[in-house]
Length: 88
Image (cartoon, rainbow, N blue to C red):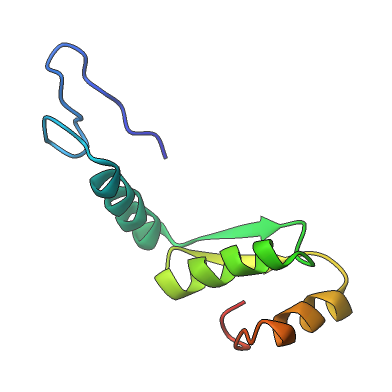
């Protein structure tokens, strides 16, 4: 999702404000993501950081994630990090 800047007016049309703070930009992106709730395929599902990102997306309700990789490795990491079954 791209947020365009109107250089003539100096405003972000999607947000309707003069300045966009990082926190406001993040909230805006999250609200767009929650409304569309897309599915993301993550090819490195056997890495802990990828599983953490998938869990974060699930908890925030911003995306559904599908992890690709060796199922045994994915479950091993999932159990060691105490991820709940429905989170990823």
